[in-house]
Length: 125
Ligand SMILES: [Zn+2]
Image (cartoon, rainbow, N blue to C red; front, top):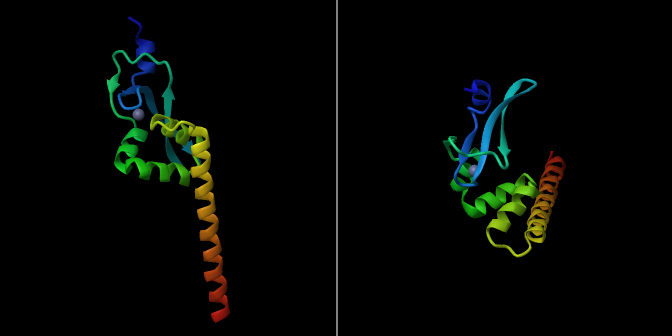
């Protein structure tokens, strides 16, 4: 039997939520190990352990709006487009753009406010 190929993808699991095979890889990122999730498109799901991937687990926990907010906060355009497409947006690219722009505007406003607080703090000292 082909033991090697079996070993190579024994960590690969199949997510029934996004219907993709995935694998967690630990990456040495200087001081800390980082969990990175890899997705395999067109990977045979046959015989793979069924487990919801980190992304879908998180998404289920956050709920729809929470997930959109999270993708906006991380400016994850690709994921956002994909998600909005799944949700039936006619033009997910445009919608994602709008969401991301709104998030950036919001952030700018926040920074402005923080600057104001900071500068008013200095004045009071
Ligand atoms: Zn998934």
